[in-house]
Length: 473
Image (cartoon, rainbow, N blue to C red; front, side, top):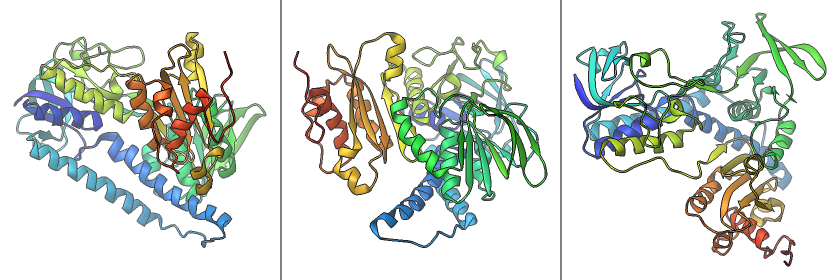
């Protein structure tokens, strides 16, 4: 059995690569061990988590309506129906991907692919009905194996009460108490879901703040909200040990106040993800893997093996679905002989907590580390009529600007719907816009999108609702 192009992995990067390669006239087979296409993002990550975050958001909004004199009774959560609705969304999307593959004549092989050499995969397990031979040869392979949640051996105690993000999304039950180990975006998103559904959520983070590495101006409103909604937040705190005691998990914590032991119904380990680059024969190829486990690639997604390209999480940070999809399309175009390369300035990141945090391009922290001069312009949402009407003025829009050229270098937004606003900033950064281009673009009123322009007006000294006139030179 032979195919011109084999895509190993059926996630957002894998199916984007497979579909475009087929559209460009190549013969394509996609090898995916799961019986459905979609990968971690669709099956056990981005989509189910956002579906549950929508539920959490509605519950929170209903509670906040009390300030308007509109009160609802306490929500009755049927966890089985919540889970079924989430699964229905996933099923609909995976079914659609299967149909798109068929229409494009992309051969779907549901098996585990193991490299025999640089041009051969051994097919194991899965659904033998989807492949007639146990060996699949190819001219080129696009490696799209993704990543999995990191689980240190010390935390892997064999208890169903200790979960990773995949387990948390299963929603087997609503625990009375949940400890989230790790204050990154995945832990905070899942903590938000469980908190709004009625669980007492606590967070411990080894670093000195939540979302380490993110802009502190953007993180501050989220920290304030988390302290209001979660049972406790402990930073500079280490988890020493976990022990299943039958009716819960005893967690030994070591922090600024010494060592304590607390019991939780469940524990979510959310300390990051690791690339899937071992256990399937890459050592039988010429692919180079770095010390962090990432496959090394160039801007055309080519590896050190001329027959193999790599995309997505396995090919390096940031581990984001949209980055994987773009890299997948680049790889497909390269194999079709087009002059494509992954050459982007701004890859947006979004934390879908409440409030949301989104950023793209250069951050103030990165500029400081590089010794680069910048100007920062911030527009507080307390000055936004739409934010006031929404009852959510805990937001901020921030531009990072080159002081000499006045080109925009980066943007950050925190607040209600920040993830929907950052796209305009990505386009502006990629196109090399000047801050005046953005400030002078007419935005609809009253909307949150205005804050993108208004932050530009703050820099120019022309903001209406904020009195910050530009200093004369």
